[in-house]
Image 1 (cartoon, rainbow, N blue to C red):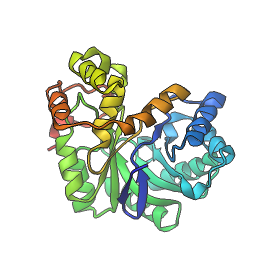
Image 2: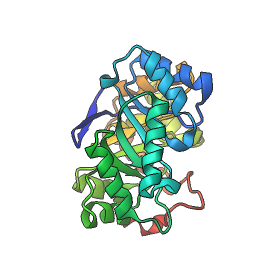
Image 3: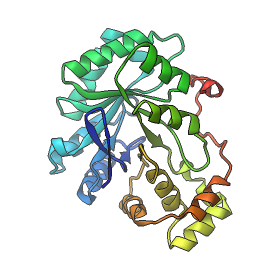
Length: 275
């Protein structure tokens, strides 16, 4: 598995997203993924499944040091003491002394970003997080975190797929040595609606999802964390690594619509200020 080296971490480019994977079924899904060779697991306080992920990590037979584990603090818990309580609860549920990457899940309107990042840096210094980062941050917010506050951000996790242009975020992140992790990398199941992508899939003897996933994984500094609960889906995502896209394929993908954002809650930042 190819990895991204950032901030002292070696993060596998393909990970397992666990949103809505809870309870015994969630635990079994993570255990299956570990058995298949996944070593990058992504969860969050808000998912309500850190206990299931933790149980899988404890019983999966893989050394903790060999797993890249990301979790996220919810935007209501960005004040220092609230974040410390959230981190303690996450570590207890995950049955580990540390996470590899701790992210601010969403920017909050009116948040005190300097204090939030200061607390995250303290948690990193204390060994509770090996590295820190953000999620759903626009370029303007990334610039504030990196340039104004000076936080050692190593990753921005954003919605990114063949139907959504994230070139501004990517350009800025690369200029600062920050990785980008793509969530919803399969456009929440909408890829088959696009005939050009279906044509590429037939060309490669693959599925539209596999082609779209490989397009992401081919990009420098980009990881992807598709949610995959069934074994067949987990295997299919791993198989996408074997696809070889050429320039003609990438040209077809470039011609797809690039304005399809599917995760846009009411508390989201103003995306049009991203640049």
